Length: 498
Image (cartoon, rainbow, N blue to C red; front, side, top):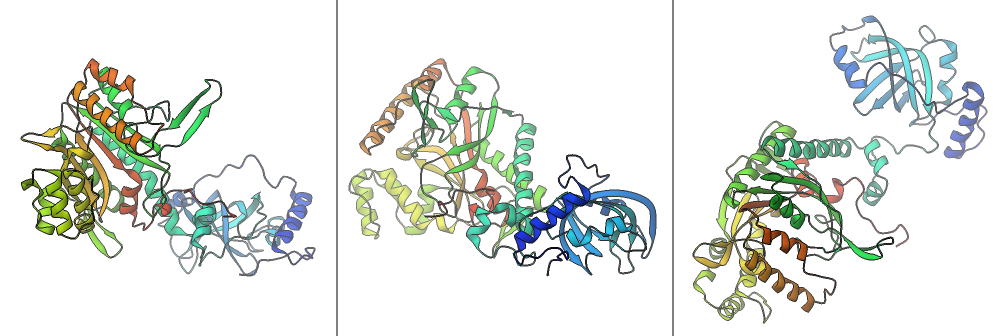
Protein backbone atom coordinates (compact mmCIF):
# COMPACT_ATOMS: atom_id res chain seq x y z
CA UNK A 1 0.00 0.00 0.00
CA UNK A 2 1.08 3.65 -0.32
CA UNK A 3 2.70 4.96 2.84
CA UNK A 4 1.37 8.16 4.36
CA UNK A 5 3.55 11.23 4.13
CA UNK A 6 3.16 14.27 6.39
CA UNK A 7 2.64 17.55 4.61
CA UNK A 8 6.11 18.71 5.57
CA UNK A 9 7.83 15.74 3.89
CA UNK A 10 8.93 17.02 0.49
CA UNK A 11 11.22 14.25 -0.70
CA UNK A 12 10.07 11.53 -3.06
CA UNK A 13 12.71 9.10 -1.77
CA UNK A 14 11.09 6.66 0.73
CA UNK A 15 14.13 6.56 3.00
CA UNK A 16 14.48 10.32 3.02
CA UNK A 17 10.78 10.67 3.81
CA UNK A 18 11.27 8.46 6.84
CA UNK A 19 14.23 10.53 8.00
CA UNK A 20 12.12 13.66 7.73
CA UNK A 21 9.38 12.01 9.77
CA UNK A 22 11.99 10.99 12.32
CA UNK A 23 13.11 14.60 12.64
CA UNK A 24 9.50 15.71 13.13
CA UNK A 25 8.95 13.03 15.74
CA UNK A 26 12.06 14.09 17.66
CA UNK A 27 10.67 17.63 17.76
CA UNK A 28 7.19 16.51 18.72
CA UNK A 29 7.71 13.65 21.22
CA UNK A 30 11.41 13.73 22.05
CA UNK A 31 12.83 10.23 22.45
CA UNK A 32 11.78 8.10 19.47
CA UNK A 33 13.82 5.09 20.66
CA UNK A 34 12.91 4.86 24.37
CA UNK A 35 14.84 2.46 26.56
CA UNK A 36 11.79 1.30 28.50
CA UNK A 37 8.28 0.29 27.54
CA UNK A 38 6.28 -2.17 29.57
CA UNK A 39 3.51 -4.10 27.84
CA UNK A 40 1.01 -6.03 29.91
CA UNK A 41 0.81 -9.03 27.57
CA UNK A 42 2.01 -10.47 24.28
CA UNK A 43 -0.25 -10.58 21.27
CA UNK A 44 -0.78 -14.32 21.67
CA UNK A 45 -1.68 -13.89 25.34
CA UNK A 46 -4.14 -11.17 24.30
CA UNK A 47 -5.83 -13.47 21.77
CA UNK A 48 -6.07 -16.29 24.33
CA UNK A 49 -7.36 -14.15 27.19
CA UNK A 50 -10.12 -12.50 25.17
CA UNK A 51 -11.08 -15.45 22.98
CA UNK A 52 -14.54 -15.56 24.58
CA UNK A 53 -15.40 -11.90 23.93
CA UNK A 54 -18.70 -11.64 22.05
CA UNK A 55 -19.28 -9.85 18.74
CA UNK A 56 -19.43 -6.05 19.17
CA UNK A 57 -18.63 -6.42 22.87
CA UNK A 58 -16.32 -3.94 24.61
CA UNK A 59 -14.35 -5.06 27.66
CA UNK A 60 -13.65 -2.80 30.61
CA UNK A 61 -10.00 -3.92 30.48
CA UNK A 62 -7.28 -1.46 29.55
CA UNK A 63 -4.14 -3.22 28.32
CA UNK A 64 -0.78 -2.30 26.78
CA UNK A 65 0.75 -4.14 23.82
CA UNK A 66 3.57 -3.53 21.36
CA UNK A 67 4.62 -4.66 17.91
CA UNK A 68 5.72 -3.83 14.40
CA UNK A 69 3.23 -2.19 12.02
CA UNK A 70 2.52 -4.59 9.16
CA UNK A 71 -0.52 -2.92 7.63
CA UNK A 72 -2.33 0.40 7.80
CA UNK A 73 -5.76 1.26 6.43
CA UNK A 74 -7.98 4.35 6.27
CA UNK A 75 -5.13 6.79 6.96
CA UNK A 76 -3.99 4.77 9.95
CA UNK A 77 -7.39 4.37 11.57
CA UNK A 78 -6.85 0.60 11.38
CA UNK A 79 -3.38 -0.88 11.89
CA UNK A 80 -2.17 -4.43 12.37
CA UNK A 81 0.84 -4.77 14.66
CA UNK A 82 2.81 -7.99 15.05
CA UNK A 83 5.09 -9.25 17.78
CA UNK A 84 6.83 -12.65 17.68
CA UNK A 85 3.66 -14.39 18.87
CA UNK A 86 1.01 -12.96 16.54
CA UNK A 87 -0.92 -9.88 15.47
CA UNK A 88 -3.40 -7.40 16.97
CA UNK A 89 -5.65 -4.91 15.20
CA UNK A 90 -5.41 -1.33 16.48
CA UNK A 91 -8.32 1.10 16.02
CA UNK A 92 -7.70 4.84 16.28
CA UNK A 93 -10.80 6.99 15.96
CA UNK A 94 -11.73 10.44 17.19
CA UNK A 95 -14.46 8.93 19.38
CA UNK A 96 -11.99 6.77 21.31
CA UNK A 97 -8.49 8.08 20.62
CA UNK A 98 -7.25 11.46 21.91
CA UNK A 99 -6.05 14.00 19.35
CA UNK A 100 -2.49 13.79 20.67
CA UNK A 101 -2.30 10.10 19.79
CA UNK A 102 -4.04 10.50 16.42
CA UNK A 103 -1.56 13.23 15.50
CA UNK A 104 1.15 10.54 15.35
CA UNK A 105 -0.66 8.48 12.71
CA UNK A 106 0.66 10.35 9.62
CA UNK A 107 4.22 9.81 10.87
CA UNK A 108 3.85 6.04 11.39
CA UNK A 109 5.14 3.92 8.49
CA UNK A 110 4.96 0.23 7.79
CA UNK A 111 7.71 -1.45 9.75
CA UNK A 112 7.71 1.03 12.64
CA UNK A 113 7.49 -0.48 16.13
CA UNK A 114 4.87 1.11 18.36
CA UNK A 115 3.32 0.61 21.76
CA UNK A 116 -0.42 0.95 22.28
CA UNK A 117 -2.52 1.29 25.40
CA UNK A 118 -6.25 0.95 25.02
CA UNK A 119 -9.56 -0.78 25.57
CA UNK A 120 -10.29 -4.29 24.31
CA UNK A 121 -13.23 -5.01 22.04
CA UNK A 122 -14.39 -7.47 19.40
CA UNK A 123 -15.63 -5.86 16.21
CA UNK A 124 -18.89 -6.68 14.46
CA UNK A 125 -16.80 -8.65 11.98
CA UNK A 126 -15.38 -10.73 14.80
CA UNK A 127 -11.83 -9.38 15.04
CA UNK A 128 -10.28 -8.71 18.43
CA UNK A 129 -9.20 -5.09 18.48
CA UNK A 130 -7.77 -2.47 20.79
CA UNK A 131 -9.33 0.99 20.82
CA UNK A 132 -6.17 3.08 21.13
CA UNK A 133 -5.99 5.57 23.99
CA UNK A 134 -2.23 6.12 23.80
CA UNK A 135 0.30 5.45 21.02
CA UNK A 136 4.03 5.44 21.70
CA UNK A 137 6.70 5.40 19.01
CA UNK A 138 9.24 2.77 20.12
CA UNK A 139 11.38 2.44 16.99
CA UNK A 140 11.22 4.56 13.85
CA UNK A 141 12.47 2.54 10.90
CA UNK A 142 14.51 4.17 8.16
CA UNK A 143 14.11 1.51 5.47
CA UNK A 144 10.84 0.38 3.85
CA UNK A 145 9.62 -3.15 4.51
CA UNK A 146 9.41 -5.65 1.64
CA UNK A 147 5.85 -6.14 0.46
CA UNK A 148 4.29 -8.45 3.04
CA UNK A 149 2.26 -10.66 0.76
CA UNK A 150 5.07 -11.43 -1.69
CA UNK A 151 8.04 -11.29 0.62
CA UNK A 152 11.54 -11.53 -0.83
CA UNK A 153 11.37 -13.11 -4.28
CA UNK A 154 15.17 -13.26 -4.62
CA UNK A 155 16.28 -16.46 -2.87
CA UNK A 156 19.86 -15.25 -2.34
CA UNK A 157 18.54 -12.04 -0.81
CA UNK A 158 16.45 -14.12 1.61
CA UNK A 159 19.61 -15.81 2.88
CA UNK A 160 21.68 -12.62 2.93
CA UNK A 161 19.01 -10.54 4.68
CA UNK A 162 17.43 -13.18 6.86
CA UNK A 163 15.82 -10.56 9.09
CA UNK A 164 13.71 -9.42 6.15
CA UNK A 165 12.93 -13.00 5.15
CA UNK A 166 11.53 -13.78 8.59
CA UNK A 167 9.73 -10.44 8.82
CA UNK A 168 7.82 -11.12 5.61
CA UNK A 169 7.66 -14.91 5.38
CA UNK A 170 5.61 -16.81 7.94
CA UNK A 171 6.92 -20.13 6.64
CA UNK A 172 10.52 -19.10 7.34
CA UNK A 173 9.57 -17.77 10.76
CA UNK A 174 7.82 -21.03 11.63
CA UNK A 175 10.78 -23.12 10.44
CA UNK A 176 13.22 -21.33 12.71
CA UNK A 177 10.84 -21.54 15.65
CA UNK A 178 10.53 -25.27 14.95
CA UNK A 179 14.29 -25.62 14.68
CA UNK A 180 14.68 -24.16 18.15
CA UNK A 181 12.03 -26.55 19.43
CA UNK A 182 13.78 -29.53 17.80
CA UNK A 183 17.20 -28.67 19.27
CA UNK A 184 15.78 -28.15 22.75
CA UNK A 185 13.74 -31.33 22.26
CA UNK A 186 16.92 -33.28 21.51
CA UNK A 187 18.44 -32.07 24.76
CA UNK A 188 15.34 -32.96 26.78
CA UNK A 189 15.18 -36.40 25.15
CA UNK A 190 18.84 -37.17 25.83
CA UNK A 191 18.55 -36.04 29.44
CA UNK A 192 15.43 -38.17 29.89
CA UNK A 193 17.45 -41.12 28.56
CA UNK A 194 20.04 -40.52 31.29
CA UNK A 195 22.73 -38.76 29.26
CA UNK A 196 24.89 -35.99 30.70
CA UNK A 197 25.54 -32.98 28.45
CA UNK A 198 29.20 -31.92 28.26
CA UNK A 199 31.17 -29.36 26.27
CA UNK A 200 34.38 -30.06 24.37
CA UNK A 201 36.82 -27.68 22.65
CA UNK A 202 36.03 -26.04 19.34
CA UNK A 203 39.66 -24.96 19.01
CA UNK A 204 41.92 -28.00 18.80
CA UNK A 205 45.65 -28.45 18.32
CA UNK A 206 45.09 -31.80 16.59
CA UNK A 207 41.93 -32.27 14.55
CA UNK A 208 40.31 -35.68 14.35
CA UNK A 209 37.23 -37.82 14.85
CA UNK A 210 36.30 -37.64 11.16
CA UNK A 211 37.88 -37.41 7.73
CA UNK A 212 37.50 -33.83 6.54
CA UNK A 213 39.49 -30.73 5.66
CA UNK A 214 39.68 -28.39 8.68
CA UNK A 215 39.66 -24.63 9.03
CA UNK A 216 43.04 -23.46 10.29
CA UNK A 217 43.68 -20.49 12.55
CA UNK A 218 46.50 -19.17 14.74
CA UNK A 219 46.65 -18.38 18.43
CA UNK A 220 48.81 -15.30 18.91
CA UNK A 221 49.60 -15.67 22.61
CA UNK A 222 50.42 -19.38 22.43
CA UNK A 223 52.20 -18.84 19.09
CA UNK A 224 50.70 -21.96 17.59
CA UNK A 225 48.38 -23.05 14.80
CA UNK A 226 45.00 -24.43 15.82
CA UNK A 227 42.01 -25.93 14.04
CA UNK A 228 38.27 -25.54 14.31
CA UNK A 229 36.94 -28.95 15.22
CA UNK A 230 35.61 -31.25 12.53
CA UNK A 231 34.09 -33.54 15.17
CA UNK A 232 34.03 -33.82 19.00
CA UNK A 233 34.44 -37.62 19.01
CA UNK A 234 37.90 -38.01 20.50
CA UNK A 235 37.24 -35.60 23.38
CA UNK A 236 33.89 -37.22 24.19
CA UNK A 237 35.56 -40.63 24.33
CA UNK A 238 38.15 -39.24 26.73
CA UNK A 239 35.23 -38.07 28.88
CA UNK A 240 33.91 -41.64 28.83
CA UNK A 241 37.33 -42.90 29.95
CA UNK A 242 37.23 -40.47 32.87
CA UNK A 243 34.14 -42.09 34.39
CA UNK A 244 32.35 -38.74 34.62
CA UNK A 245 29.22 -40.48 33.34
CA UNK A 246 28.30 -43.68 31.51
CA UNK A 247 26.25 -41.68 29.02
CA UNK A 248 27.53 -38.38 27.61
CA UNK A 249 26.35 -36.15 24.76
CA UNK A 250 27.05 -32.84 23.13
CA UNK A 251 25.00 -30.71 20.77
CA UNK A 252 27.91 -29.18 18.96
CA UNK A 253 28.95 -26.88 16.16
CA UNK A 254 31.41 -28.47 13.71
CA UNK A 255 33.42 -26.87 10.91
CA UNK A 256 34.57 -28.50 7.69
CA UNK A 257 36.44 -26.64 4.99
CA UNK A 258 34.66 -28.38 2.16
CA UNK A 259 31.89 -27.91 -0.41
CA UNK A 260 28.60 -26.06 -0.07
CA UNK A 261 25.35 -27.60 -1.34
CA UNK A 262 21.69 -27.93 -0.46
CA UNK A 263 22.77 -30.42 2.26
CA UNK A 264 26.20 -29.06 3.24
CA UNK A 265 27.27 -25.91 5.05
CA UNK A 266 30.84 -25.23 6.26
CA UNK A 267 29.59 -24.95 9.85
CA UNK A 268 26.84 -27.26 10.98
CA UNK A 269 25.21 -28.71 14.08
CA UNK A 270 25.50 -32.28 15.27
CA UNK A 271 24.37 -34.35 18.18
CA UNK A 272 27.11 -36.73 19.26
CA UNK A 273 26.79 -39.17 22.14
CA UNK A 274 28.50 -42.17 23.73
CA UNK A 275 26.84 -44.84 25.85
CA UNK A 276 29.04 -47.12 27.95
CA UNK A 277 28.20 -50.83 28.08
CA UNK A 278 25.95 -50.48 25.02
CA UNK A 279 26.46 -51.41 21.36
CA UNK A 280 25.18 -50.28 17.99
CA UNK A 281 21.97 -52.27 18.40
CA UNK A 282 21.17 -50.23 21.52
CA UNK A 283 21.94 -47.05 19.59
CA UNK A 284 19.47 -48.03 16.84
CA UNK A 285 16.70 -48.13 19.41
CA UNK A 286 17.83 -44.76 20.80
CA UNK A 287 17.65 -43.18 17.34
CA UNK A 288 14.17 -44.56 16.69
CA UNK A 289 12.85 -43.29 20.02
CA UNK A 290 14.39 -39.87 19.41
CA UNK A 291 12.97 -39.48 15.91
CA UNK A 292 9.52 -40.58 17.06
CA UNK A 293 9.61 -38.13 19.96
CA UNK A 294 10.71 -35.18 17.83
CA UNK A 295 8.17 -35.86 15.07
CA UNK A 296 5.32 -35.98 17.58
CA UNK A 297 6.54 -32.80 19.32
CA UNK A 298 6.53 -30.85 16.04
CA UNK A 299 3.62 -32.42 14.13
CA UNK A 300 1.61 -34.33 16.74
CA UNK A 301 2.20 -37.55 14.77
CA UNK A 302 5.02 -39.76 13.53
CA UNK A 303 3.75 -39.39 9.95
CA UNK A 304 5.14 -36.32 8.19
CA UNK A 305 5.22 -34.86 4.69
CA UNK A 306 8.41 -33.96 2.91
CA UNK A 307 7.73 -32.49 -0.51
CA UNK A 308 5.46 -34.99 -2.22
CA UNK A 309 6.56 -37.87 0.03
CA UNK A 310 4.87 -39.36 3.08
CA UNK A 311 7.46 -40.39 5.66
CA UNK A 312 6.82 -42.35 8.84
CA UNK A 313 9.12 -41.95 11.82
CA UNK A 314 7.38 -44.74 13.68
CA UNK A 315 9.90 -47.36 14.81
CA UNK A 316 11.25 -49.87 14.38
CA UNK A 317 12.96 -48.73 11.18
CA UNK A 318 13.99 -51.08 8.40
CA UNK A 319 17.41 -52.65 9.06
CA UNK A 320 19.54 -54.04 6.25
CA UNK A 321 23.24 -55.02 6.06
CA UNK A 322 25.11 -53.12 3.34
CA UNK A 323 26.31 -56.28 1.48
CA UNK A 324 22.71 -57.59 1.39
CA UNK A 325 21.39 -54.27 0.10
CA UNK A 326 23.99 -54.23 -2.67
CA UNK A 327 23.26 -57.84 -3.63
CA UNK A 328 19.53 -57.16 -3.78
CA UNK A 329 20.00 -54.05 -5.93
CA UNK A 330 22.68 -55.35 -8.32
CA UNK A 331 22.98 -59.11 -7.94
CA UNK A 332 26.65 -58.69 -6.93
CA UNK A 333 27.48 -60.88 -3.91
CA UNK A 334 30.57 -59.19 -2.55
CA UNK A 335 30.63 -61.39 0.54
CA UNK A 336 31.40 -64.32 -1.76
CA UNK A 337 34.52 -62.56 -3.04
CA UNK A 338 37.74 -62.99 -1.11
CA UNK A 339 40.10 -60.44 -2.63
CA UNK A 340 40.18 -56.79 -3.58
CA UNK A 341 40.84 -57.76 -7.20
CA UNK A 342 37.72 -59.94 -7.32
CA UNK A 343 35.63 -57.07 -6.02
CA UNK A 344 37.06 -54.60 -8.54
CA UNK A 345 36.56 -57.05 -11.40
CA UNK A 346 32.93 -57.73 -10.44
CA UNK A 347 32.22 -54.00 -10.10
CA UNK A 348 33.74 -53.23 -13.51
CA UNK A 349 31.79 -56.09 -15.10
CA UNK A 350 28.61 -54.53 -13.77
CA UNK A 351 29.48 -51.17 -15.33
CA UNK A 352 30.89 -49.34 -12.30
CA UNK A 353 33.98 -47.18 -12.71
CA UNK A 354 36.28 -48.08 -9.84
CA UNK A 355 39.85 -47.02 -9.13
CA UNK A 356 42.63 -49.55 -9.67
CA UNK A 357 43.75 -49.44 -6.04
CA UNK A 358 40.33 -49.66 -4.38
CA UNK A 359 39.84 -52.24 -1.69
CA UNK A 360 37.01 -54.72 -1.32
CA UNK A 361 35.33 -52.44 1.17
CA UNK A 362 35.70 -49.32 -0.97
CA UNK A 363 34.04 -51.16 -3.87
CA UNK A 364 31.16 -52.22 -1.60
CA UNK A 365 30.64 -48.67 -0.28
CA UNK A 366 30.80 -47.15 -3.77
CA UNK A 367 28.23 -49.52 -5.27
CA UNK A 368 25.96 -48.91 -2.28
CA UNK A 369 26.14 -45.15 -2.82
CA UNK A 370 25.45 -45.51 -6.52
CA UNK A 371 22.61 -48.02 -6.45
CA UNK A 372 21.04 -48.19 -2.99
CA UNK A 373 21.35 -44.89 -1.15
CA UNK A 374 18.94 -43.05 -3.44
CA UNK A 375 16.19 -45.62 -2.80
CA UNK A 376 16.10 -45.22 1.00
CA UNK A 377 13.14 -42.87 1.40
CA UNK A 378 11.63 -44.26 4.62
CA UNK A 379 13.87 -44.18 7.70
CA UNK A 380 16.27 -47.13 7.45
CA UNK A 381 19.35 -48.38 9.29
CA UNK A 382 22.06 -49.66 6.94
CA UNK A 383 24.35 -51.91 8.97
CA UNK A 384 27.60 -53.90 8.54
CA UNK A 385 29.87 -51.36 6.90
CA UNK A 386 33.29 -52.34 5.52
CA UNK A 387 36.14 -51.96 7.99
CA UNK A 388 38.21 -50.21 5.30
CA UNK A 389 36.14 -47.03 5.74
CA UNK A 390 35.29 -47.40 9.45
CA UNK A 391 38.46 -47.05 11.54
CA UNK A 392 36.69 -46.60 14.91
CA UNK A 393 34.20 -49.50 14.88
CA UNK A 394 34.43 -53.06 16.19
CA UNK A 395 34.48 -55.99 13.79
CA UNK A 396 31.39 -58.08 13.14
CA UNK A 397 32.00 -61.46 14.83
CA UNK A 398 32.95 -64.00 12.17
CA UNK A 399 33.37 -61.42 9.39
CA UNK A 400 36.52 -59.32 9.94
CA UNK A 401 35.95 -57.29 6.76
CA UNK A 402 32.80 -55.74 8.27
CA UNK A 403 32.21 -53.69 11.40
CA UNK A 404 29.32 -53.05 13.76
CA UNK A 405 28.37 -49.72 12.26
CA UNK A 406 25.12 -48.34 10.91
CA UNK A 407 24.02 -45.21 9.14
CA UNK A 408 20.44 -44.00 9.31
CA UNK A 409 18.98 -42.85 6.01
CA UNK A 410 15.80 -40.93 5.23
CA UNK A 411 14.72 -39.27 2.00
CA UNK A 412 17.92 -40.81 0.53
CA UNK A 413 20.00 -38.71 2.96
CA UNK A 414 22.35 -39.93 5.62
CA UNK A 415 21.16 -38.37 8.88
CA UNK A 416 22.98 -40.50 11.45
CA UNK A 417 26.14 -42.56 11.89
CA UNK A 418 26.83 -44.98 14.75
CA UNK A 419 29.32 -47.62 15.87
CA UNK A 420 30.01 -50.25 18.43
CA UNK A 421 33.07 -48.25 19.38
CA UNK A 422 36.55 -49.68 19.15
CA UNK A 423 38.17 -49.70 22.59
CA UNK A 424 41.14 -52.07 22.00
CA UNK A 425 44.03 -49.61 22.44
CA UNK A 426 46.50 -51.53 20.26
CA UNK A 427 44.02 -52.00 17.43
CA UNK A 428 42.94 -48.36 17.77
CA UNK A 429 46.53 -47.14 17.45
CA UNK A 430 47.12 -49.40 14.44
CA UNK A 431 44.06 -48.11 12.60
CA UNK A 432 44.79 -44.47 13.40
CA UNK A 433 48.36 -44.81 12.14
CA UNK A 434 47.04 -46.35 8.91
CA UNK A 435 44.53 -43.52 8.58
CA UNK A 436 47.29 -40.96 9.14
CA UNK A 437 49.47 -42.53 6.45
CA UNK A 438 46.57 -42.45 4.01
CA UNK A 439 45.94 -38.77 4.80
CA UNK A 440 49.58 -37.90 4.24
CA UNK A 441 49.53 -39.78 0.93
CA UNK A 442 46.59 -37.56 -0.11
CA UNK A 443 48.63 -34.46 0.68
CA UNK A 444 47.03 -33.69 4.07
CA UNK A 445 50.34 -32.72 5.70
CA UNK A 446 48.69 -31.02 8.73
CA UNK A 447 47.11 -34.28 9.85
CA UNK A 448 48.71 -35.57 13.07
CA UNK A 449 48.34 -38.52 15.38
CA UNK A 450 46.30 -37.63 18.46
CA UNK A 451 48.64 -39.01 21.11
CA UNK A 452 46.58 -37.57 23.98
CA UNK A 453 43.54 -39.52 22.81
CA UNK A 454 45.57 -42.71 22.40
CA UNK A 455 47.02 -42.22 25.87
CA UNK A 456 43.48 -41.94 27.25
CA UNK A 457 42.41 -45.14 25.47
CA UNK A 458 45.44 -46.89 27.00
CA UNK A 459 43.89 -45.97 30.34
CA UNK A 460 40.87 -48.04 29.39
CA UNK A 461 37.59 -47.03 27.74
CA UNK A 462 34.56 -49.20 28.50
CA UNK A 463 32.76 -50.90 25.60
CA UNK A 464 30.34 -48.34 24.20
CA UNK A 465 27.98 -47.40 21.44
CA UNK A 466 28.53 -44.03 19.77
CA UNK A 467 26.27 -41.90 17.62
CA UNK A 468 26.39 -38.77 15.48
CA UNK A 469 23.18 -37.17 14.18
CA UNK A 470 23.19 -34.39 11.58
CA UNK A 471 20.83 -31.97 13.31
CA UNK A 472 20.50 -29.70 10.29
CA UNK A 473 19.36 -32.52 8.02
CA UNK A 474 16.97 -33.78 10.66
CA UNK A 475 15.51 -30.27 10.95
CA UNK A 476 15.16 -30.15 7.17
CA UNK A 477 13.14 -33.37 7.24
CA UNK A 478 10.92 -32.29 10.12
CA UNK A 479 10.21 -28.84 8.67
CA UNK A 480 9.86 -29.78 4.98
CA UNK A 481 12.86 -27.63 3.98
CA UNK A 482 14.42 -28.39 0.58
CA UNK A 483 17.77 -26.74 1.36
CA UNK A 484 20.01 -26.60 4.41
CA UNK A 485 20.17 -22.84 3.90
CA UNK A 486 16.46 -22.69 4.69
CA UNK A 487 17.05 -23.88 8.25
CA UNK A 488 20.36 -22.17 9.11
CA UNK A 489 19.67 -18.60 10.13
CA UNK A 490 22.79 -17.17 8.51
CA UNK A 491 24.23 -19.72 6.05
CA UNK A 492 27.61 -19.40 4.36
CA UNK A 493 27.46 -17.22 1.24
CA UNK A 494 29.84 -15.77 -1.28
CA UNK A 495 30.86 -12.16 -0.82
CA UNK A 496 28.39 -9.72 -2.28
CA UNK A 497 30.80 -8.70 -5.07
CA UNK A 498 31.83 -12.24 -6.11
